[in-house]
Image (cartoon, rainbow, N blue to C red; front, side, top):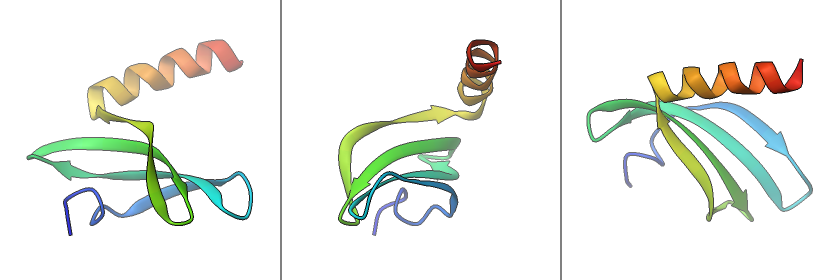
Length: 68
């Protein structure tokens, strides 16, 4: 198993019976990261993003300003 698959799932968005987006948080190469990735039939797709925590906080600010 790799470091990403061992990260705990902190959130999940179900799109349909085969596709979901998983949000994981943990350490990757010694850096605290947030990984947001689409999975199809329990396998990761190429669609996703991995951010360190500072980048994730900046993304949160951007999303809040666009969605409020």
